[in-house]
Image: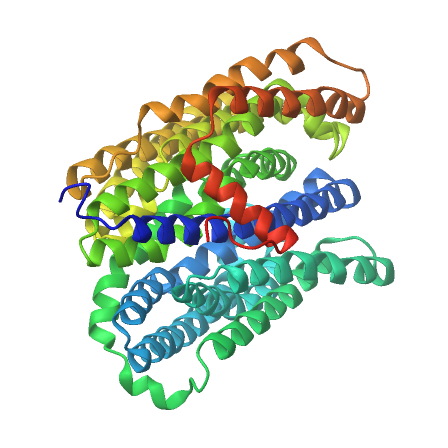
Length: 508
């Protein structure tokens, strides 16, 4: 397909869609992660590393079970809903959403029952921590609400809007913070209090997701269950269930491995390091969320040139957001960990290693989304199985010797390998290039700005971050501007300005 065969208005429309959604997604993800950091800081300081480790093991076991219960339905439902919306088939859109939620309800109930019954065995035989039993049983009650909320909120993106997916995350994170403070003051700061807040916040997120579906798809109800092609949905989604499990195995699974191989205090420390490094997923997550329906629609209609342009632009935006943040944290890792308490500074090396992995993630763009939305889920699955096996193997080899640093090393090796292999696979199967020369701009600007935190330091961890961080951001922005702003980036900035100030759309 030649460049001229693709209408310029279509490109502008798709870029504007991703830009507007990405801008909103970044704002929502930033708020969500800020709430998460506040919550983790509160838990770390009031529970301590050991109790935090117990709560985290129970919580992550529930999240791992949630992945089994979802059966890949969040991505499968979104893909088919996006395609049906593009074809103008609203009844089939509603049918696939209701079908996905119905299957998710049944499967999540079964997984919840398993976790409640098997909690003693999991706590003693798998994690070697009998104190996890009660926390795991009660935390499992939140699993159905989490699974259904993710399926329903993700489905709303078929309307090219990220608002309810973002709102669900904010309701869950913010709800946890709002609930745990009064519970902690009334009943004390302990693991049961944290688990109760976890379950209550899960129900709040579910409520927001239901509101989103009702608003975007009015009239949706049980009658639409007959409109769902369950075989088609499950055939597509089933491989993605394993993909989701393997995705978890590339990053979060190391917390569970740590729960089985190191003490609770070290699990708590590693969790804090992973939480901080997870800020690097802010840009990729926000942009990838709104990129999903665009890729599914453009790929289905054969708009390869537009798809490549949208894909490469989104990759560059991810790096603009992630590269400077992670580079700054590598230099100021100790100060960042001191925010959570002095006992967490032992995770400094682990945090630095995990930040490197996030830089690799951002530089490859939305390759995972591209493989899934383009129907290459089996390729995606094969790569993930390989890299998860690599992760488990490196954990077995490194954790006994290096402890939580070994966990971080294993995560970085597998996570980085996964994204590089996906970039190659996307190029081979879809013809999409994750890298081009324009990707050098955010990394060049980061390298120049990094001089600031290397030179500026202060004994106070707060002042160390602020005094180095403010000029670092300014220098980075100046260098990016000096290197030149791409037209698509100007469009993104205009759309962001219009969202904030309500201005007329530029170019009209």
